[in-house]
Image 1 (cartoon, rainbow, N blue to C red):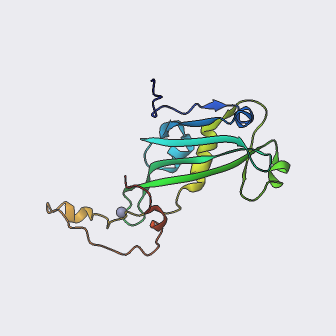
Image 2: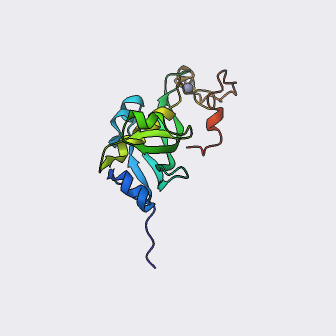
Image 3: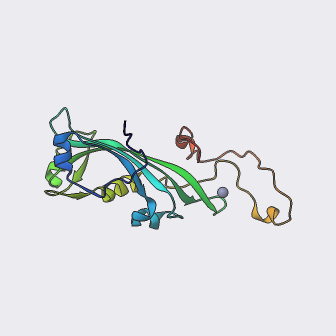
Length: 177
Ligand SMILES: [Zn+2]
């Protein structure tokens, strides 16, 4: 039996209302380089965003899309100013609406996806969700390597140091890069 390959790109365009009516599930990746605002906000355009989307009619009768997007993105470590790769996870729960007025009337567990008739840019929507999920500050999980000590030729043993801001606590459950 033919097995659908899991590693395939997410389609860039789609009709979210039609997808919701049909109960379409989309699974795929987006090359980070295709998301210009993510590239601007991070240190590397390498890698891919893994995306899983389920379009449906919600219990309230709203056209909706739920799912998640995840990527390992390079941010600047605020302790040593070197790049640090952090897992970024975004839970998606959007209701597809026509305008701001409809957006305001949504139940709390939905964020609005304001889009007109027909095709919408799925990459743009995912990019927006990921931007909202970027941590404000990032640190190396282990102690940063001191580049001055490194240049002396002796490898430095990493010291356990307590992170004062605990920002990475929420990321600990995610798989390490
Ligand atoms: Zn660091």
